[in-house]
Length: 441
Ligand SMILES: *[C@@H]1O[C@H](CO)[C@@H](O)[C@H](O)[C@H]1NC(C)=O
Ligand SMILES: *[C@@H]1O[C@H](CO)[C@@H](O)[C@H](O)[C@H]1NC(C)=O
Ligand SMILES: *[C@@H]1O[C@H](CO)[C@@H](O)[C@H](O)[C@H]1NC(C)=O
Image (tube, rainbow, N blue to C red; front, side, top):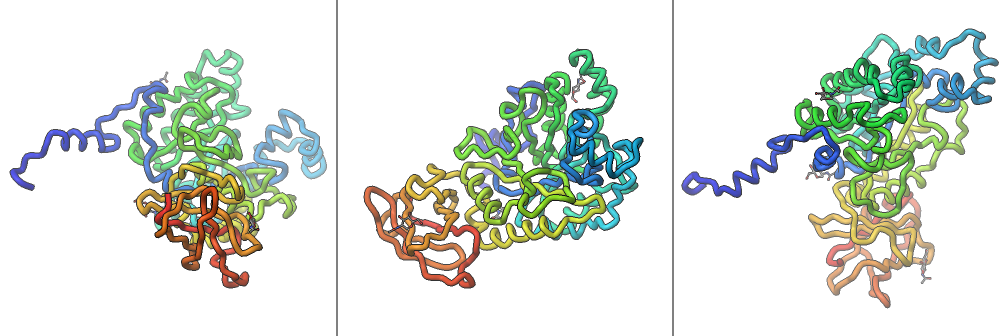
């Protein structure tokens, strides 16, 4: 290294690059929102959401069971309780039945890893309270994940609790007091971070209270400056009334959010395979579950528009991942095994959806200068038109998992790709197909 003297600009850039190095975040949104999102999250593209809690015991209706039954007195919930439980049965009486006797964190990890997901987000506390079997289930999942996979751990946490008397007191005071965050939420969040070191902190349930009440920017400044996961942790945008889609880490904006265009910030589409619920439902019919074709299409559209997909499953009270969820996860993995190059580590391209063939969505890999055109349908006439790429003589088109294909330019712009005649068993995959273009722009 020459005379051992480093140029000043090099030293300066070293200081600036080191994540968590010199940057100190301040407890205000301007500073918190300026933090660059750790790179791993955008590269990962696909995560698994897991709603598991006392609501998995009744496993009826949805994870909002307690609220719909006791607060809103929604008829099917009230009837279900009348018919099946003694009159004085309380929600808390479900807790001893959250038994988890079949729960095996290693088995869960194997299923998660087979799906091709790169992170999970596990509910620690929904909007109710934390009770359970006398085991640290979060610790078991965290350890199994770290020992047996390269998936990262994320934790879901609800700021408020529906029926907590301290929260009700603060609410009655129009949130001018903050007994509940001081006594419960903030200590709990610190404990979760220090104990389990999650790399996603998925906040939810602001209870219509402002972020000042929750001291969200104070907590996030600690998380980004001083916590054990300050270099790699990502958070979402649900940190107080009005913060969603506006402040925090990445945007979620709404459940099942699918903007179908680019946003000026990284975002995540959280959705659930059982279209009617996030928690397990014993009486869910097959028709309520999304098919793997629909799930692959959702992943493709989400990634094409710059988002990550967080796909939810609801395990049972006794710790099983039911075969329908397991099958969907394994199918996603089969598809990603062939087509992962068109998803992981990609960025959005200059166009998302093809103007002429709308069942085509694009992704882009800048390092290799390759454009991916993802076909949600296999054309039955032997060719497909990509109207967006600009070709050159040396442009190459490859069907991922198969090989090079012939193509010809079309007017006014784009190309027609000639597809091979393949029997089902000869296709590289069954649910969406990726064309990789090199030498095109
Ligand atoms: C808010 O959080 C910060 C960081 O944890 C802490 O220093 C501060 O005392 C908190 N403020 C209140 C009012 O709780
Ligand atoms: C994505 O890029 C990162 C960093 O360059 C690398 O470590 C990782 O293996 C890549 N992932 C895939 C699936 O290609
Ligand atoms: C072939 O079918 C695709 C849709 O599957 C359509 O966009 C295209 O125009 C068709 N090509 C011809 C030559 O008919």
